[in-house]
Image (cartoon, rainbow over all chains, first blue to last red; front, top):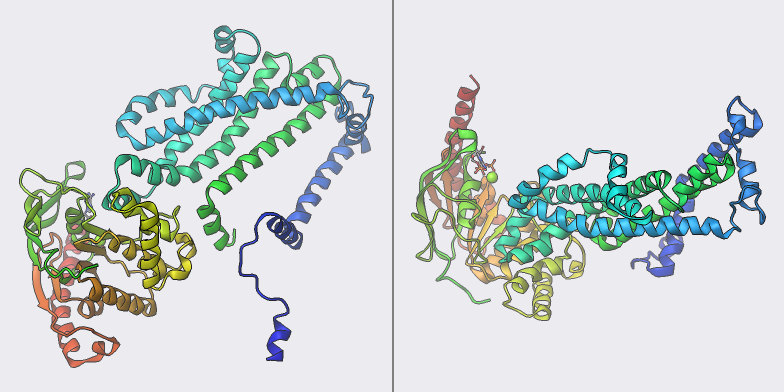
Length: 295
Length: 278
Ligand SMILES: Nc1ncnc2c1ncn2[C@@H]1O[C@H](COP(=O)(O)OP(=O)(O)OP(=O)(O)O)[C@@H](O)[C@H]1O
Ligand SMILES: [Mg+2]
């Protein structure tokens, strides 16, 4: 008996941790795996290479680019030489404008793309109508739409948002449709046996069954939204991170360019994590099944 | 749930099913007839690919038949003028690979039928679902998702999901196929126990002859494709049957009888396969 207690020093925890306890558990767990350390090592190595090329060894042509130390100094300075730092309002203005545009574009694309994809996957007839059109429009590179967008919409705001919406719409629609296709026929049959109406099947089989694919699609789609937004801002714009980068380039100030890029990377990553978290929250069944497989 | 000795009689009369993929006719079932009495456990055994699932799908209303008719308690399910039966909760299917909705907990899965059919209020349905799951020994896992429980538990839950609708016939397509012997025998006991309680008609497809005799009142051996009834063996071993039943003399004799019929068909199927290759 005493031997048993010696082995089992803490009592096994039989309930699933929630809220703050869950956060602690995750942090504690992440410190015991090599992943966290490798991530930091990777970032360090990358920064070090950058520094070596631009500031350490001053390799030809790279010496024209700002190195990490120059960028960091400017980024944290209260009065930046080149106009952009953590302490300038304009920096946040650019971020805010781009985020707002992406939010609108992603929201509209999701709002249209998910229902569209669900119906295309569910109704053969609807797919026959709409799929060929989607498939011909989809391969057109989003930049090829720029002139049309500028002609169609007034001002800066609308064409830029239109382009990002369009790009993200195609991704979302296609993934959602494939999500419906991926659902095993047995679930439809089971639902039929159990006496479901078409609407019951739509709610209880089509939507949840397609959800994993939908969220994979949304993660790609938010990336695509950022991508096309920045491209559009670079061509036509007055504000936004894409504009910041191209404007810095035109005015030959290199540091804001790099700051713009890093900010884009960071903000893009945050939005993608948000989408993933929303997905995991909506798909407990999926998350738990994957966790049991050790993933 | 009342005993229902008087309902769930299936008549399969001269049923033919021809698949027509890409213009090549595949005759899966040919002029197949069998009578299944109300409250009977009817086991279907036959070689692989002979058309057993096809027959089950026709009863369930998943696809049409080409000729013949199928009746449930004297009412036409499908036949001349109505090639495809309507799907309905009086014929519940338990699928070969399992079809609990992975996105619903076991309780939600079980409560689903009565809720969409509007035979119970939500709260009622959930209460009943929890009770029935508990009765099947799944009381501790009602809030788990199918992906979180063992395959044996999932299969039992699926049978509960079927039974909550008080079906006339339970259609099972090799439900215990991929299970180890131990889990299988537990499954058998649990199914027999359920059957003793509900006396629901059971149409059960299997490859496992021991399983067929152990569970069945009748064992229907069907021929290699196209599927026809070859031989019916009545199993008159009294219920409740237990583990020891399987080592009795009676059991052994029946095994031999069924085995002989199945073996003959298996060889035919094998030779047919060889001919197609040659
Ligand atoms: N949708 C279909 N289209 C064309 N042929 C089919 C179709 N479904 C089944 N078949 C063919 O019909 C025959 C019978 O199939 P079925 O699935 O009913 O066999 P089974 O007896 O259930 O086999 P198993 O024991 O392997 O499950 C097979 O030869 C199969 O290839
Ligand atoms: Mg089969």
